[in-house]
Amino acid sequence: MKALVYNGPRNVSVSDVPEPRITKPADAIIQITRTNICGADLHMYEGRTDLEAGRVLGHENMGRVAEIGPAVEKRKVGDMVCVPFNVACGHCRNCERGRTNYCLVANPDPQVAGSAYGFADMGPWSGGQAELLLVPWADFNCLPLPEDATEKQNDYVMIADSFPTGYHATEMANVTPGDSVVIYGSGSVGLMTAYSAILKSAGEVMVVDRHPDRLALAEKIGATPINDSKGSPVDQVMEITGGRGADCGCECVGYQAHDPQGHEHPNATLNDLVRSVRFNGTIGVVGEFVPFDPGAPDEMARHGEIAFDFGQFWFRGQAMGTGQCPVKAYNRYLRDLIHRGKASPSFVVSHQLPLAHAPEGYRHFDARDSGWTKVILSPAA
Ligand SMILES: NC(=O)c1ccc[n+]([C@@H]2O[C@H](COP(=O)([O-])OP(=O)(O)OC[C@H]3O[C@@H](n4cnc5c(N)ncnc54)[C@H](O)[C@@H]3O)[C@@H](O)[C@H]2O)c1
Ligand SMILES: [Zn+2]
Ligand SMILES: [Zn+2]
Image (cartoon, rainbow, N blue to C red; front, side, top):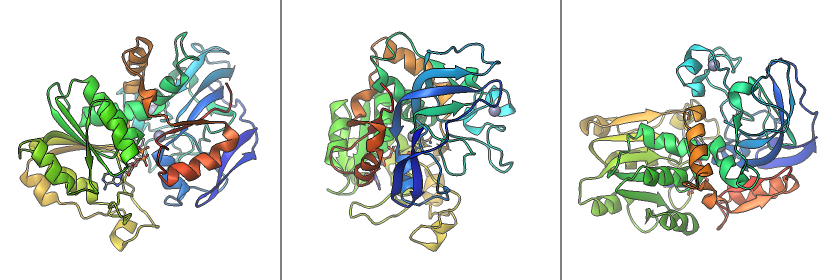
């Protein structure tokens, strides 16, 4: 079958790879109809992880069940399903508590909890930017989609990652009705965070970035865009919030945060958040940070260490949540919002390309070319 293969930094190709096969009774194989390119794929694409050459990328997947193992009871061939990016067993200590983001079984590395498809350091699972995807523990991992699945594919595919991840950022930041919220990053995760905060009736939602096309999308859904190339984002947030700072803050950029000129400062968004959020406010960090980053511009960051203003954070009595999103904690409910016409996360999608054009999609998305906000690949209709 055809799949998007990582060959090395900024080098991906659509190549022939072996088709997946059912080896465990609870496995299913999904024919992929939609699979997104994510900002997380770009950390790997740029060679800023230890992803092995030859791996198939793609963790934001949906499609049609093509084959099931003998123990799969709830899903049947032909069902349309959306697959959380987390691979989870469903019955370990963490899965039982809804923490599928830190499943203790799906990642064979005993030092690491948590697993994902087509992802560096997150287990052996192959990605879904391919014609077919193997999904283990299929009853647990395949969310069934209603009868409008085909018509609303570009909405439903967003619940594999960006939409629940954005929602999770607002949960960790404790967003409640009327709150002011500042979000750093206006990629699809930042935009989904803004959208989730608005769904939760936040009073004021501010989104910081420097790409006018992405900020325009934030404005379109009712958020206040803050362009940090036009002046300090902290000063702009202070002005909007009457000098108090936002009640809640969300980090949706990650360790490759940079200044508007492109120089990386992995601590930039965290320190700006601490100063943009009020005393006793809460911060949710979904942007990805890593324990080691050999390609980092400075020695500290190479060891995953960043110069965080802990003194200021402590002095302000703030709280912070971090980590991967447990997609299954939210995907059923976000699916129902889409089904009932109350949410339409596909507003972030700028391009839908056939799988064969995936390398071109990676190139433009990685360059953050204007208008390339979110790329969906469609290996099958
Ligand atoms: N925690 C999770 O479960 C989870 C899930 C999905 C993605 N992620 C992570 O979320 C992050 C964002 O993903 P995405 O798909 O939106 O990526 P993206 O690359 O499309 O967007 C990132 C945005 O951040 C902006 N940015 C860079 N430096 C900035 C700064 N200093 N201040 C403000 N904005 C800045 C960029 O201009 C860009 O628009 C990535 O690190 C990704 O790995 C985490
Ligand atoms: Zn993703
Ligand atoms: Zn588990």
